[in-house]
Image (tube, rainbow, N blue to C red; front, side, top):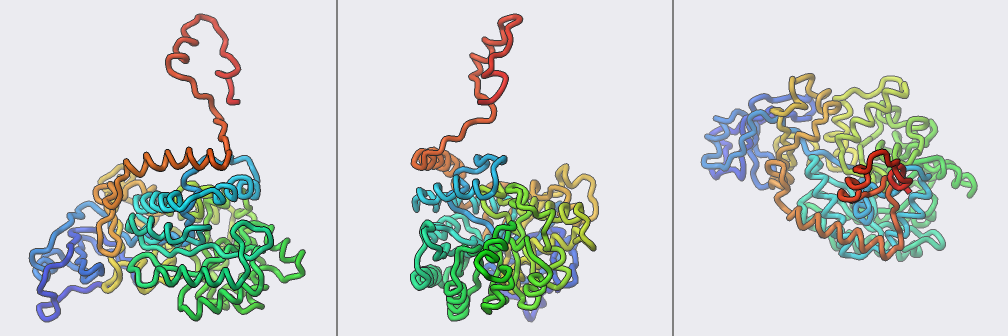
Length: 491
């Protein structure tokens, strides 16, 4: 699990970085925690773990990052995070409309009007926020129009990512194309990102009932030929099962099993509304699922009534966590997703709900394995990528110290992220992102939000009125004057 170099095996040159005197949560198979540990980072990989004195001797003259008072955990893996258009209108879609209305009255028009500049900025914004919360890997499950611009935005921020353009061939759907053309575009995206050390391509279909059998099978064959994973959306609510039944198909997962497209390469986003046979099919084929509990609550999709993710995991299924899009999850905070998953499953009384240590594994080592990155990231082990998060325990959320996994999942640990490394590079230092001018990003995001809403013709009425301070003060300086309707309620 841990390795300390000897005189015979030590690299004589300095390490790129020594992370010194940390409490290391390895998430290795034995789940060991290493107090007072030091990590040597060489060429983006974890080269050694051991006492500070030993590693200083083995890697003389190395720059150091003082981790005294810090818990170091593996970088979190966000297995389902859209990055385009929606971040520019975050927390704007009403929370009292049905999920389909939120999608088709808001998101579809926004994606129809978004530019490549918008998408690149949105991706950068999402990656910067993700990194600030300690997510070092982000899997984009389908952008609509500009996947290579999205990849550029993610690369600028310095996050590890997978990117693809949404594919679908449903009649009259925006950006839909015949199956052959859709597959050609998918292959072009994968080829264009081949060889990138951080941001690579994968096959991304929109899924649901918007994809023909020919496109499903063609995508599976293409992923096999290109040796890349694939993802699509299925059954976040009851609508997909109803649509498949209306078309004379078996239930969605069973239909995909009949097509022969399930398997270890496939990550299904959501898969909430399943029956026993569908759960069995996912387990038998090794198909993974990304659970996004915050999105299901925001959109009212019935996760607490129908979710089967604990049962899937207990049966040996592959499960990861995600945050979905800003029109659903509102923020790419995987700590919040983990806490919601743990609480919702426990509250609705599922048998044998997952403990905090098991849920934290979903956000790290088990999540990485589910998305096919287990050999690279998700745990702190020699040879793996130095995707690391330093949490400052000299903060109130860590005072006093409790059980470590319980505190990580339930104790708002995400607010204590101090430093973040991706592939050995410090992308967050002392709570400041190092790769992007955040002030400039904030200003451009505000400008692009306003321009995008103007193009689409969406006006977002405020729930609460805005009253200038001078007017507010003047109105309330008149004794006995009753509030006007504008003061009493939102329009």
